[in-house]
Image 1 (cartoon, rainbow, N blue to C red):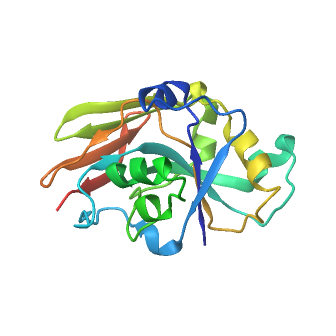
Image 2 (cartoon, rainbow, N blue to C red; image 1 turned 180 degrees about the vertical axis):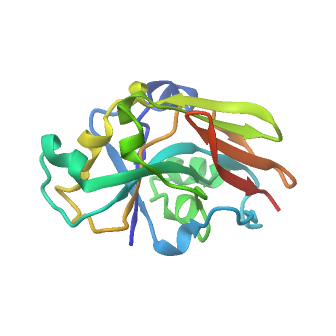
Length: 204
């Protein structure tokens, strides 16, 4: 199982980090050791100081595929959920300035929190018309809507599958909207998809 992440897939998020709007999807990967399963706490490592959340819609791949045409992409996932891409932002800024890869600040152990419940895609009329939200200690901190994606889920699957064979169980983090921010020890993060709580992470 692999975790495929799409960077800067919301214009307002790219702007809030002073990044240019990409002209094609930005892909980075996380290993399976990055998974933080639903309900487990996140322990920020001591090798960075600025830990930030990035809440994202996540799709779970349900069948083997490569070179998938956009019009068939909907056949390759049956469930959707939420995830948090935990990021060592101070380390990322330094790596970008030095022209280095992002792995150490994005793909470390337990950097990919996933939901406690996956929701069948069939429960929604349109995956590109979903609202999701992150609350921290009961206060809304990040709200996204999938119709604001630069690249849709199906376009992402088409693009990614040109480079990587998609396998059953693979997860695609589809990008985060504006509103990313810091987490602190003691915070309780809860994620809601269409008003339903499906993600719960405590910062320890």
